[in-house]
Image (cartoon, rainbow, N blue to C red; front, side, top):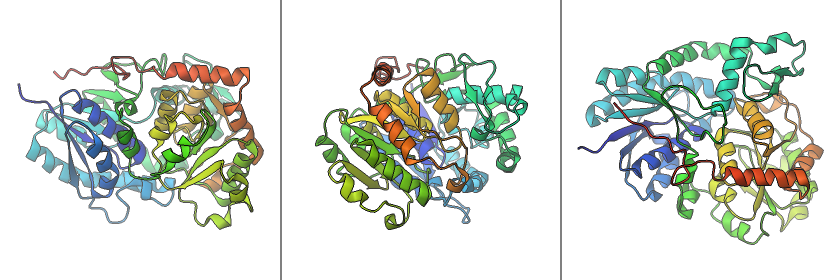
Length: 445
């Protein structure tokens, strides 16, 4: 029997292509011939992880014909401009179709945003599996809110409402959700095409496990294969995941006491203004705990860093500019807490490493993921972020006192802190299966 050949087509953002690269590695470890198709702008971010993989994976690059937007969402100036990139994804259809004709794979695993991949797979008579990079929990909550519209029954954007028809008691508010015509209208047509493409696909693969999202992974032909980051068993693989950066982070952590460091990172697109950066710095210093803080796209530090900050935290605090090997850092024994924006990859990676989290959602599905960590899994403490905002100036300022409080709660030794730590340790083995993955199996007919 010929070796099964699968094309993997990730979206052009770190939060989407990193787990799909992990998924390709997972399939390759099972004897599948895996090929990742991406743009030249993503090659430097994908190649280090593939080069470290003990199993052969091929990378094919295609050009991004649109010259008005970058071919990597991490390079867009602000998250709200990602809409322009999403609308430009159609320009990849023709070159991808050519690769299908040349290489004739048996299956396509496509990010759900590539709606046209359903037509191309159908034309060649091969199955198309969609990959959803978000949590099952956020999908169930979004569907419940869209159908029942409980947010329309409250008078104020900050007034809490109960999400109906879900397994746990979940309260949200309109201010935390992406429910405005201003945000949705530009992509309404794309969302409709996406829903139709989902209906025509063979099935869905998710980066999660049923144990991690109890009661929320459901549906026909839905396979939970995560957390896929666990496929990176080697330290060098974990360090190369998503790109190169912070080569001496691990050496710095080696010199810290076990469980003493709080790791702070807001994802590849989570930018802050100067006032908020200043509050984060002051809060970390006031917490009294050693920290490793990853800062991206923050401009000149002299414009926001508090006077005397570097001297105050010298020897105990470390600021990393740019990219850091998050899975490797979270898995280090010195890390005892994680301040996170609640992107789904970060939630998974923190839970997989047994690290309790201080939750600070910014936009997208992050406010929904926060409720999973805080209310369902009980491994999170809310920092106090209350308003959805693509842009930093749209969000409510979180003060240094709240930052310090949340860090102390996560890193503390009290009964609640110990409970979160124990719950986190329980989630470490949530994957099930022989090697800690979701244990899902896909049989293509």
